[in-house]
Figure 1 (cartoon, rainbow, N blue to C red):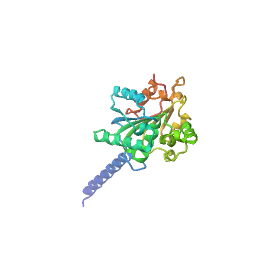
Figure 2 (spheres, helix red, strand yellow):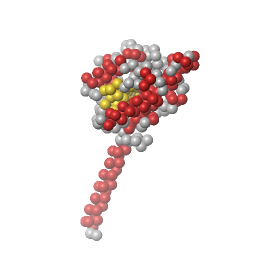
Figure 3 (cartoon, one colour):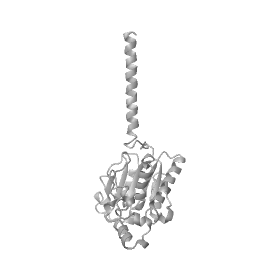
Figure 4 (cartoon, one colour):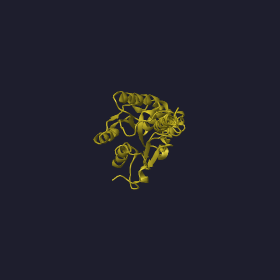
Length: 256
């Protein structure tokens, strides 16, 4: 083989090797240490909103309307058992909605979990490989580590504390199962209010691996109750921005 031909073959082999490495890096960038693919952050899909304990959708309907006005397709889920039954049954409802959205052509989903709906969302991520379908997640005042009121109800009045109530008690088996960091590469914003009178302590909403945001850290004068979280204009602005295509980072200023 002539030196020129040998040089050309070596050059072609080197080029092919570089292409393989580049493609591998790009592929790895869309995967995480669990080996699963991650949705394209530049292609937002349907937004699914998961109600809290009791299943009321009134407040989330207003948030969904604001998302629709911002150009997003948004759907508020109806939970089985009025949102007071088995949280894992609620996970199945969310998973069914995700599958339906994907079948209808949505490239991925964004999920908003309000209150206990955030716990349902976290369980879904853990049990149904949710990080492979969820482009981004936002939770609002979610008792990811339990709520004292649920613990008191489960201990002192178990007959008046439905299954979801017992499962939301601090230290429950179901909460212990998700007491771990998020899958790598899943953008998640957890917002809560220090005025929360329902989820105590309010920072039960803190999630390892998420962007954790007590509202008053950027809006010191804000007075927002637990029930106001889905309808507060400042939080709505934060949610819409978080579900955009810019990298999800901790906000530094209170929305106007």
